[in-house]
Amino acid sequence: MRRDQIEDLRDEYEIADQIEEEYSRGERRHKRRVIGIVIVIAVLLAIVFLVLMLQTYDSVQVLESKSLSDAGSNGYTSFAGQILKYNRDGVSLMNTDGEDQWNQAAQMQQPVAAVSEKYAVVADVTGTNLYLFDEDGLASQMQTGKPIERVTVGNDGTIAVIQENGSTPVVSCYDKEGALVLKHQASLSESGYPISAAVSDDGSVLALSYLKAGSKGVSGRIAFYSIKTKEQDNTLYSEELENEAAGEVFYMDNKAVVIGEKQCFIYDGIKPSKKKKTIELAGEIEKVFHSQRYFGFVLRSSGGERALTVYSRAGGEKLNKTITGVYERAVFNDKQVILYTGQECCIYTLRGINKFDGQMRDGMMYIVPLRGINRYAVVTNEGIDKVYLTK
View (cartoon, rainbow, N blue to C red):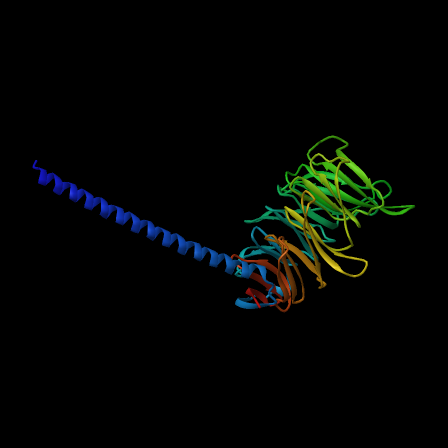
């Protein structure tokens, strides 16, 4: 090959290298511009999100409404990601569009409901009928034989029922098929009167809180019983609470929480012992609420101020805020504490953000968060509304 041809080829390669280098520089500049635009958009979205999440709203805009003919005669609670509604004539599971997923006829004079993650039980207080449900509908139906006072259900479907029986009240446990798996008879003179029951998540342990009258006044007692053992004495642990009345007891995972008057106690709910965590309560308890991970109170101080406090199941404080309103109901839903009465409503997140404080909807009976930012479904005595929080 002649020298001039070699030089021509070299010049062509150099030109190609220059073109490739210029293209690479242009591509890098384009990538930097795209990355810069993405960062700016992400920052703007984060700012918008923070503005929406951090401010307090005081009114709502109605997005959709649906009338329900029997809305005002029902009780409501959250179950299986939807809304369980119940009345004297039946039980149904309703989605947030107001549509029933299933409906079960029942006969009750005074229905009450209790739920766990997988099961819901509806019972006739002062009657004997019990209905157990999973997300697909009726799982079993049973009669207790003696009048029902209190009822609860565990995550495996085990039901615990406190029943009237004069001076020797009975606590019975049924499995999800309706078979009796435990019958415990209390004595007013020895153990006291059982006022609250809870079943561990695996259905192996029953926790009972008692009130006992003595010469020094009313005292509390907590006791844990093995449900599945066939031994004559199935007591795992019991303890008298000194200078403290025992109230509600409930399970959170493997922790058992006992609510007193001025204190609450957290036990290992599967292997209970004297070793427990004690939390001092700074006021009189007005409301108690809990989920599977958190529990909380509305407390009133001696000066009349009210505080909203929330704890983890290990006993760590997650929230402590002063509130001004007086509310009939307090519920946990989607890491939010929702307080309401009539049309007045107050919503706090576990991060301490006061999302809402104002009037929600007339005749409000229940409220649940929806997917999306600041959206809720509100059940009223006329129907169900989907609302958006506004200023």
